[in-house]
Length: 385
Ligand code: G3P
Ligand code: CA
Figure (cartoon, rainbow, N blue to C red):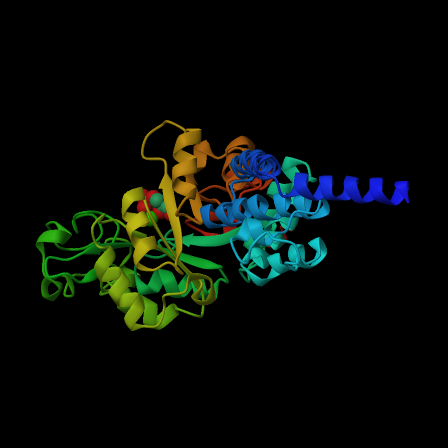
């Protein structure tokens, strides 16, 4: 009897303690401490793994809710007190911790968990292997064996550069891509020509930007190279797209840094907004122009060219370019294994220009470049993988 009475007294003392302001204050303090801990841990993890902001926010919110609730639930504290739903009085249903944890799956956490698993799996790999894997995955989206063979301005060693004759030859010779240069005429047409003036490669004179398409279209862009090519016209970009898109890859270099709107309109009108599907890359020496184009056509493949100065790109340069470029393409004399690795580490591929002698090919293969831009595709051996 005495034992029964003292058990009863102890029980009511326990109840009083559980419902006392002291106990509530203790529980609140626990929640705050655990929430702070979860937030700090998540922010550190985010910085280390560069999770997107929304993902980090969700992970933080999940941790802030579920860790304390799991802990408090196992010590008898109702979860509804944390969520604000219901009240903390006796009898309020507190779902089992297991059930509450599984509810993470109803929200974007499926993606978060997938990413975390992927990140955890890659984190286990050495950095070089991770880099190799991501570059291989990226290159595997394209139907070409690496290094790709890219005919520079067409097969410009044997036909007049940037003409249909040079592009047709590239197609016949089995190049993977044609590289071509684009400038805007006075009346806003996108014309395929390398130099700022027509002087070197046509029978005319003057700046492309000062001449109308009516004048440009009547120039001879073949006879300067060889009499066999007399009468080759300057092509328009739209003609090149209509003639070659889908048959061979196109690496379009936009020479004018402010012609993105015209280019985007042209590609959109032809249903060529998607880069890999249409085997279409647009590149430029002007990174900000390519950033704008990326914003206009997010599905296009974008390249930044490096090599107008002798300076190799800094880590900061590469980080900046990799934010919007799929390719960081470098000048032949800069391309070594170290630079290729630095580009690959940022998830970008690299196409190197311009090979004019067969002895230049070996070192590029050794360095692991993804594509070779050459005046003559015959210089690059086919059996290369
Ligand atoms: O593909 C890059 C290369 O074409 C850049 O140099 O002067 O030949 O246009 P450039
Ligand atoms: Ca070019």
